[in-house]
Length: 171
Image 1 (tube, helix red, strand yellow):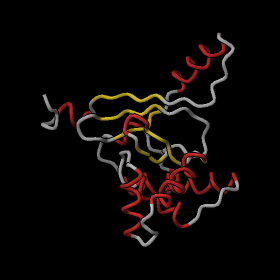
Image 2 (image 1 turned 90 degrees about the vertical axis):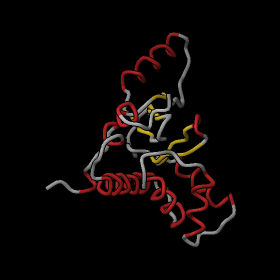
Image 3 (image 1 turned 180 degrees about the vertical axis):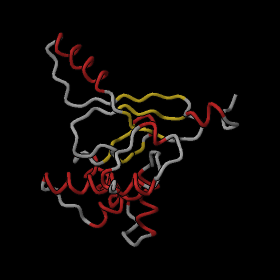
Image 4 (image 1 turned 90 degrees about the horizontal axis):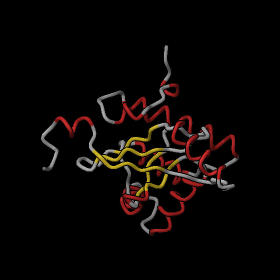
């Protein structure tokens, strides 16, 4: 029997109907384990911020997260959300999607990886794809210039399968 914590989402699952509750629960469980292994304290507000990010396969702005946190009784001052999101990013539990000025839950918490974000310009869904080949090419290019990469994120804008096939495409 496959347990929810063992379900590992991929870029493909973000763009198709799938067991999202299992996807989110498995990712949350792995994130909690990763935080525990690092000795990072997952406070209730940090936990809830991550749960909010995991509710959908899309990136959310800090103020959207703040509104949701405030509705849950965590306060309505911007530092509440920004500190929680900063903690999640610093500990590899979320990523900053710069193109959208937003945050997305890391779908591979606890793993050493350089994410590639596939951003649908029509519906706003965001998929975190593994890109070991891209990472390898980047590290090789950096090494040729004696450069040490500390952090890299690739963001690709396009259309998800549903929007390519459906009426959501704005021509």
